[in-house]
Length: 216
Image (cartoon, rainbow, N blue to C red; front, side, top):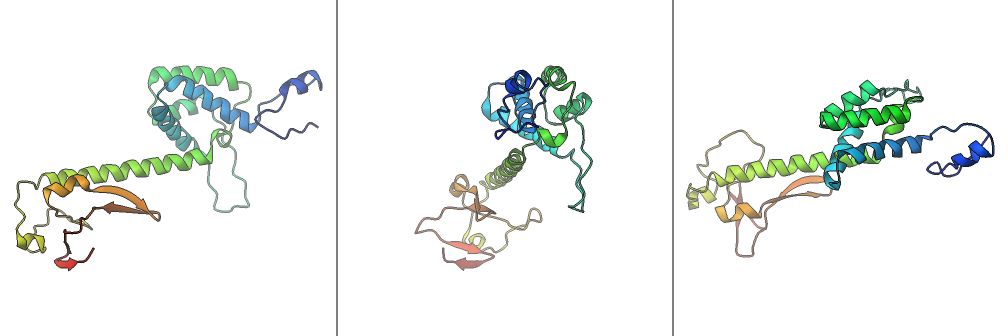
């Protein structure tokens, strides 16, 4: 029996030379090796590389079966070359890049294919989920700004400012009607875990919510 404290550096040379036995990649080594294979191929742009690898991690994580009974260990899912090909395609990796990754993956792991759980970093999966939420929120804000820009030609009368006779274009939970110069100041922000739209207000500015004057 051989024990190593750090799975990232398991001293394979000692096991081979000192103990005279072959070595196997640890789960941590498999995870780091896979990440290195992918990032070596998908480009030098760190932000883009992290985003693509985050999607790959999410799609690999989706392969892991979930059991309602936590005491029951789910059957391990072996990640074959064809499975990797599907994951890469779902994650937006180009065919040329995917071919290189698949070949390298098979050469490195061919004799002992890893389980999906051995390639997944839960922290990266969580970070990718937050990244997607942020992108979706930014998209929603941009759409809102576009809709507000389209109303620039409509004059804002005192009656409109009080919320009277404002036509409802669509059914939304929140409808904003602001002066054109305020549109560019609107931005998204997560406060205490809650998605919010923030509209900065100057001291001499006033707001009305559903026709009711509101003190800010």
